[in-house]
Length: 142
Image (cartoon, rainbow, N blue to C red):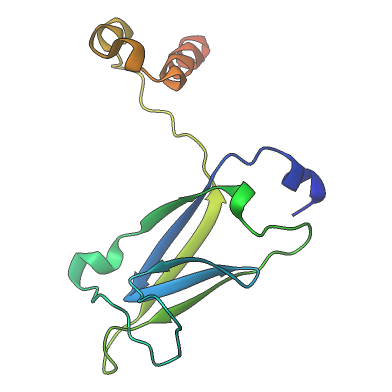
């Protein structure tokens, strides 16, 4: 990361994790999170506290992180992970990790009814929805 990237408002970061069975994620040597792992000291023989099976093994877990609380620095940052099984004779292991800026995803607007949404949600209607409606109204559609 450059110093200007660090100084800019990164918003929040989205960490997506897929692992079978447990994992601990580190950024620049500092533990960020544990997923299905016990508290306390961890060794290579520590077992995960949960068994992933079936469709559970294909679901990404999403964690939202505040960049201001992360040990980020200018230059190269190192994201590392350790993956643990729930039982020693496990026949499989899976792991995938992604850390990205958390960009808002605009909903489909073709069938959005703003007056109806305002009527039902009132002040609870998020301001970002109004900006999406405005962007959609100004966009060139096929």
